[in-house]
Length: 617
Image (cartoon, rainbow, N blue to C red; front, side, top):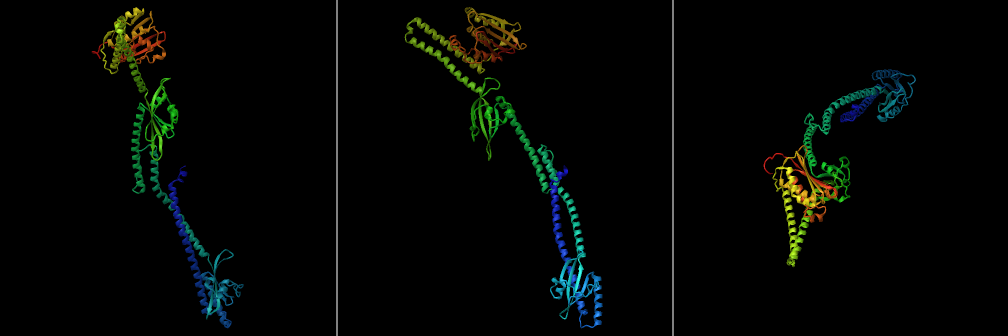
């Protein structure tokens, strides 16, 4: 695998470049050198043959070694002997075949006498052209013999007194010449191969000095990508690679710092999103959910793995409104209702705030959706409106009655004593009801604003319950309603605000008497629970009870199950609300359990303190 990887490395590419450059240079030099050398050798070879031919021709001409028919026989014989000796000596010196020709082209002497050739006419084209005094190029010729040997033939005329008296014909082998050139080529090829080997070796070493730092930088870049920012690249020098190493080390340090800052900001953002009371969703440009915080999951009752990737409107369960996600510069706000994941058949009122995320040159790349639970605010607003309406209604009814009766008295009812007395009585009753209503409202207001301070003292619970029964004894006898008081012996005395708890008990007992038929029964019980840390007091009757649909709102202010009957009985609709606030002020809780036509049981618990720890609170 390492070998395969090596073939893909920059180092090999650099080595190949070095080798190819040297190879190209050597080949270029070699071709030029060999061609020049071959041309030089060939020219020297030709010049040498020409010089030999010219010297021989001159010698022949000066010695009059010709075949002149007018010459004497003894001169002819001597000339032939001298000519044969000259040619043989020249052959031994130059190792070239030579022929001396007469003006007719007949061989009269040759370096290697051959009877078959002597006296015969040489028909070579170069000889013919030499005898015809044509230029030198046409009297030279390169040939390849039948045995594959390369030779050069040359013919030069022999002149005497401006007249051609014969010719010199030389044939010389060129194999030594080409053998020398081949040896030189071999030497050059060997040198080239040695140069290439050295180039490859030096290229490996030199490219290693370049690629080693690059490999180290690559290795460090891989480690940085995996999150290791501690190591640094070694700097070998101040060249470009050294500068690159320094720049990479600086980049690593900056990147480490930037990632640390980014991680810190991410942790802050995660902490903020996790601890926000509002749900936060992030969507992409298509409206698909990509991020949601824990509060959003809680509000929507959705699994994050399922919710991620869902369409926003599908997740919220509301109709598609694409324009809601296309806000350019403003925040889109919409009030929606979504099912409450904690309670069935309940809905959360949610204020949906959508802010678009803009990316430069891309436009809207997503949205941030904030889900603000305003259920309690809506309930408070509804309660406020209902409270104002109820107070207005409760005050308007007696005021209307008082006004009507006063107008009747003014119109002449005063003249009739019995009628006037009845009208005045009604007016007084309505005034008292208004006073009770205002008193209860003021009491509630003080409880809400924490202005009604508790004055706790040690109180005997059994005695307190007996006093309650005594206060309602007349009404109980009048309605033939029986009452039972049951106090566990362990209860004893408890630290509480006697007046406030008396008001709670009076409200509960009064309601029980009102809604219990004649001959009914009422029970008041007190016991300790939770290992004696809580005092529980119950007021139970067997009256008409309360429908289930009204149980959830029975402690609301001005809420009445039977409005007409409650008002006729003098109730303000604030008794249970006041009782709940008093119990809460003591740090306790109150509950109501009822079955229609079976009776009602109201129980409240108070924290127990058996010893008075100071004065009132």
